Image 1 (cartoon, rainbow, N blue to C red):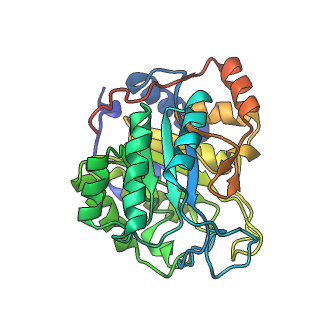
Image 2: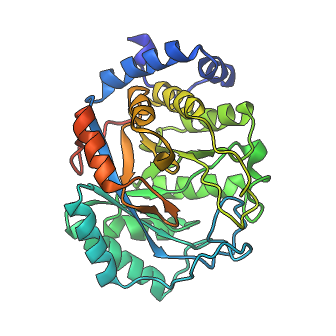
Length: 326
């Protein structure tokens, strides 16, 4: 079907027209695309662990871990490999098939901490889990080292449009983000990159973000759609999070633009009711995080997730399920 084909040549106005379609029509097409490329009811289940918390020199306006803001986050040095192994085993027992590790660094440094992270990757991979990391900016050599250690994916969100980016972050550029993604891709890692809704951006910025993601070739294998979780002490503490309709519209558009990608219902999910989450799955979301915390922000309760899965007939996607080329 022509409308279901994988494209990387989207025009910006095509993306805008798609995003602004009547919502029911948009959801219906997204659901059809989803059924064509994915098994309905299968969802990739991930767990995210903060392996080094706080003390980051960046000024991301939404983040509790920046040293520039007084948010009450306790700074913790890099965890031990044994602590990470135990957390990964618990995540696997809870049903997660991908284990993600996040360190509050601006960029990776070639030092003993990075050597420890490489050992963490080898350890988690040895448990039969997919392994993702988000460590800040990477050089090509560091990306290659992570790949050789067994890393499956690298997360580095674009957050918003290039035009709006410096209203949220000034300590690095949009080009820095794209260079890190390219380094990860060149090393043979899959990409996990998406955005955050509710940063004060306009509709045009959301369209621009989706256009940037959809014209990457290949598409990111995972696209997290985050809702801002306002954190006291950050510049965005008084922002209103996006509505469920804005979340669904973005998820549905992403599903049509990047039909083979995993679209992840990420931060802010705990604010959504079971019915609202179900609507997101209908619109094309097929990945989520399990566990009580996403780095420093709250996440949905595991028992609630298990009940939701039972109600909707959702099954976790097995680890290392075949990834179709994008």
